[in-house]
Amino acid sequence: MRIAIAHCQGRLSPVFDFSNSLCLIDIDCGRETSRELRTLVSREPFRRAGEVLALGVDILICGALSRQMETALDAAGVRTVGFICGNLDDVVAAFLQGSLEDGRLLMPGCAAGRTRRRRRNRRGRG
Image (tube, rainbow, N blue to C red; front, side):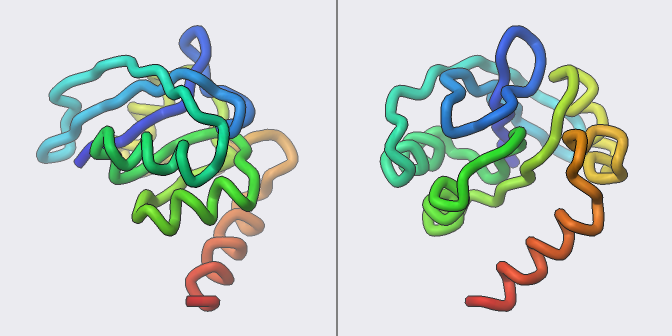
């Protein structure tokens, strides 16, 4: 599995739509096996989603993202975990432990129930 984390200087970027940097992390058997940094070029949602998909990303972890960007990533088959904040290494550790959405790393003002409800509604639309 390959996850991508939108970041800036070791912390998650607050808005994926305007972030240029991705940290790509390969995970095998619940452990990080490699890490590399990549730069995104496009700001247009469907082109940007294509860039992310071309990097082999399965899951994108980010701060906020626009509905248009979320739709583009979803259409490309990239799962998003949004409204996350914090230090890059803390986010990776929480992901590996399965505790990413336990509330500790959610952006201020983003209650865990609201995030889950939004995902549940999104699944119901398809």
